[in-house]
Length: 194
Ligand code: UDP
Image (cartoon, rainbow, N blue to C red; front, side, top):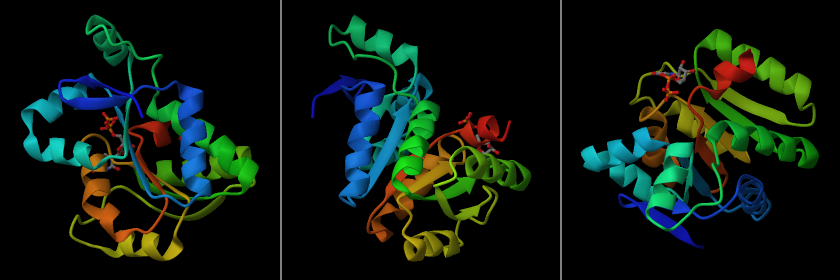
């Protein structure tokens, strides 16, 4: 698939709706997928921190999360169609999940925010099965969350630990999982919780 390189980060040449369709195909074919929706802060961090760059290199797809990336691509004479943000991708994937009865695991945020997020998803997307969740304040070396995800095998796991923790957590654990979509979504639970 065509990518546009910005400071050594390969951005997928796609628009929001095509990207969600692509991820949906991966869910249906049970193809494990790691998505990073990267903003300029992530690109800068990849420049400065080689271990963070290694997490990015593990991603299946990196999308342009922010107008700064779209403008950067244009300046390099290799334009990207539009922004493909974490929040919009999550919401559109929840719509697909509602349509196809997919299962979801939610990792991250404060306990109270997480509970509200779960309640709002259950209300707005009644066919989505929330198979498990854990708040975002846990001992990093405790493997039980990854083990639980491995047993539950959710179609999608949304990870809201903020940058760079969410990318680090997915990159460090993805090899354990057999299938599913794994995606860092920053403060999106806070938005969904209202
Ligand atoms: N968060 C978390 N664990 C942490 C740090 C942050 O679960 O150790 C959650 C935080 O509660 C919020 C989300 O990560 O729901 C995004 O945090 P922040 O706004 O700091 O990250 P950013 O959106 O700037 O990447």
